[in-house]
Length: 70
Image 1 (cartoon, rainbow, N blue to C red):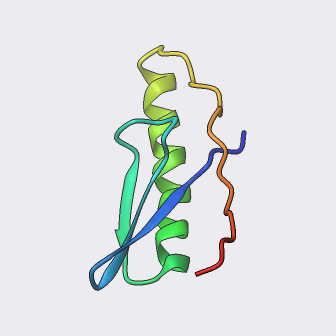
Image 2: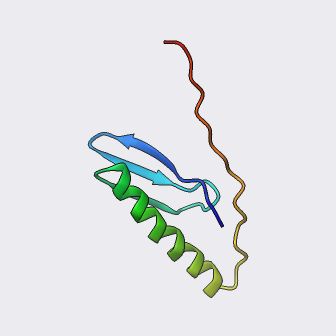
């Protein structure tokens, strides 16, 4: 499965979350680090859902960037 991870600059660090997995979040000093942490967080989150017998939410969110003239 491929989940969309949204990354935001948050002051001196970066935070990230997965809209399709509420509560699945991470923060780190760089975008690369936050993506590594999100990989682990997603795996951990899905493991917990499986363990509890809950269904795995299907990936539904997509993201795109739109370029506009400044």
